[in-house]
Length: 277
Image (tube, rainbow, N blue to C red; front, side, top):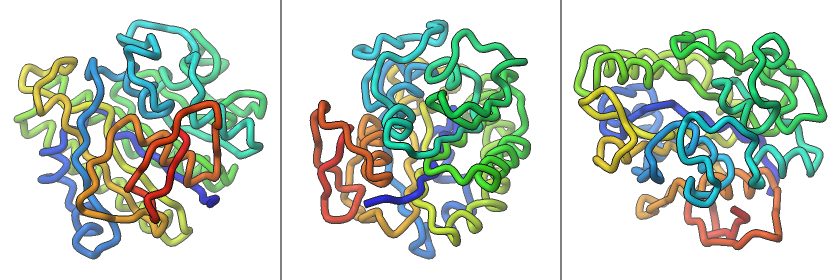
């Protein structure tokens, strides 16, 4: 099975807020074009460790990326490394920590902000380093990468929801309206990507609490959404997907296999396929 895949990681988006405030994604769900699952993120519920978990299928305790201040390359096989090894095209519009994990570290804005290098794991990238970088700009960056380079795998990673949570907390007008705004911006591009036949996964690294932070075990910190869009997904409502299975799902969709890794049953995809994680 070979598809083109877009993975969207909405940083800091709690499940309950996604369920209540993402009107366009919920419209796709009502029209049977998307399925929403509740996923529990791994621990600690922090950004850099969970970027690594989502993109490698490895928990922070195993990867060694256990807090946000660890600045080094990943030592794990990732979607990016497996795709590059298979001759597939990779791209990302994302926060610069993603560049540090899979390309060059430490991040140098002049060198790395706009990446075009087929030798890198992320071959084409627009990376930002300010947390208040607007979602509207980020989605434009992603669409430009898609049109210009036609990647097989595209990571899209906006930060404004997380920034709003740290500023105002989970139960705030600011946080909820930022989620609504991101949903509106997504609505400009998702119909195009769906029409073009992409398999799309929309999730979050972690949630947010009322203390304007995250990192612990509260449900609002750990419970995140997982929307899947595309005809390669099973759309079975009884699935209980794990955050560690996202990497394997993407690899299976892309037709990538890493035979040195254990395989797991994954009901997100059709026919209960076994996938490399």
